[in-house]
Amino acid sequence: MKKRHIVMIFCTFSFLLTILSACNNSQVTKESFTGISRGKVEGTPIATREINIPDKPNQIDSTPITQPKIDNAIPSTPINKILQPNPTSPVKKLTRAERKGSLKIPTNSWFSNMDPHKEPSSTFAAWGPGIAYHRLMKFTNGPNVKLPSMKTECDICSEWQFEDLHTITFTINSDIPWVTSNGSTIGTVSAQDIAFSLNRQKTEGWSNAHILHMIKDATAITDSKLEVTLSAPDADLFIALANGRSKILSHQNITDLEYQIPENVVSSGSWLLEKVDKNSSALMIANPNNLSTPHLDNIEFHYLPEAKTRRSAYLVGLLDIYRMEQFEKDGVELEIKLEDPKPGLGLQVVFNTQKEPFSNLHLRRSVMNSIDPKNIIENVWGNRAFFSMGYPMISSDWEVEESIWSTYFGNPDKSLSKLKQQGHEIPYPITITSANYGDMHIQTLNVISDQLTVGGFDPSLQILNRREFGETALTNSDYQMLVGPTFPQTSPNGHLLTLLHSKGVWNRSGYSNSLFDQLLETQASQFDDKKRSQNISEINLVLLNEGVRFMPVTMIHMWAWHDQIKHFYPNFSLEEYSHWEHISLID
Image (cartoon, rainbow, N blue to C red; front, side):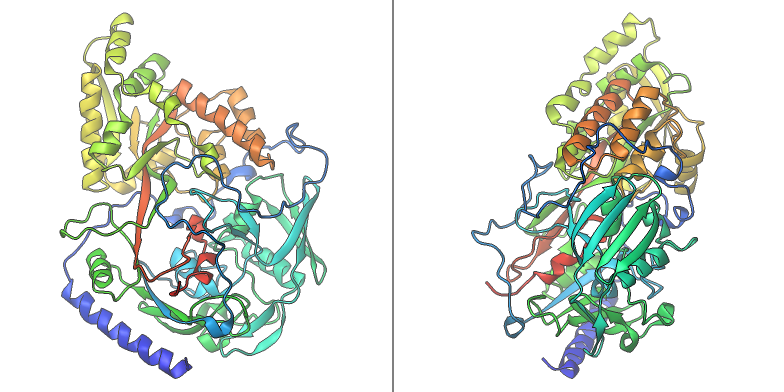
């Protein structure tokens, strides 16, 4: 398809969506479980900067660790069933002549900066111009990947190995061309480009600098050899390198990236930026220098902030892929193609263990006995949520099995009996601090209050505005029990060390235990996946036994797409986008 034809179709579609958006002008409030804007994250101390991680944890073998071959191994039982086709053969690699078709995909936000290392939005990174760039690593996706998964593999590298616990060397694929938006090639990707990009992204004060906080320096040894030096061993390194914001740029073609126009964009990925309209749309076309992927001619990303507009456009066939809102009441049932669990996103319960009444472990356990997460998930959230401990998870191996966590909850008679045995007044008065995060959140609070009442408590709700709740959750310990969203983090250590460690900068539960701290530090630097999973299982049991915090409602994102879309097995972890390469509109 010629470029002018692509642009004409693109503009016509944009016009139709503009009309549709005008027709759907009613205000729709999206229920937010973020609580605190990402802007407040930048420049703050992160994970291993604040805590001394041992250089030589005894759990790490002394022999060099090399990257295993990617075998699409299936993790243990997933949190939730993934509703997707079961192919009988691997996805076919299409030649350039076999590519055909276009996708039209909505996004509910936009970006303000065209510089990949300064722009923090997920829209730019994975739902717009950012998909034109490679990364050093990427998150694995495919028919055999069970979500949630942060399993990583090489993107622009071919292999890696540890020289010691502070030094990793990467072998770079040196035959990947840099391509301008008009399809001209200008050299190939080198280790110098990657070293430049990683060091540039770490620039102090930039929006995406915190992602690579564990990297001290990146150095090109040769054109195809890269050395990365760590400030401290951090098992989240590969997650940081695979993050959709950690993009590789050409060090010889850096101009004023903030105000790039398509003609100036130089990238190495499977897509090229053809056209971008501010606060409207972005058109990505297949890179003609990529012989096997992508499988489509182009992808059109459209900014549609109204939920009703996105749904209406999907229903009439103007959009191809759609993420459903929590509950949609227009009488039309959509076929759910994917249930995507989102560990770390949801409603969390936190006890103030340093202040009465919840400095008393027995009272914390009685509250847990009273609350029934299964009842809340089924009757309030329609089974579109699950129980977790509240942190981002590498894989479903980190999940607490229901047979374990359920023994701590849903037994109000046990709670009532404990309160009586310890001589507490019944009903026992407690205060729950929260904020209004939408109708579903308020319904959940009311159900929790009712469950606590049955368990022998007299709960009162203190409803703050969202800003006040965010400040309380991060900087204030003047509460008894918090119920609301947790602080957003992009990696497990970002949560485990900052919110759970006794020296964590956002530990507002006040829980402190030296052995627990050691366990947190051990997992933080544990590069062996199996051993780290064992550490996490121990951490989960401490959190449950000690009644520190838990997430009774963790989000599941529901996705729908039209039947003509094939070979779509997305992994949306941390702005992953390589799945766009494999989608096709043919059998």
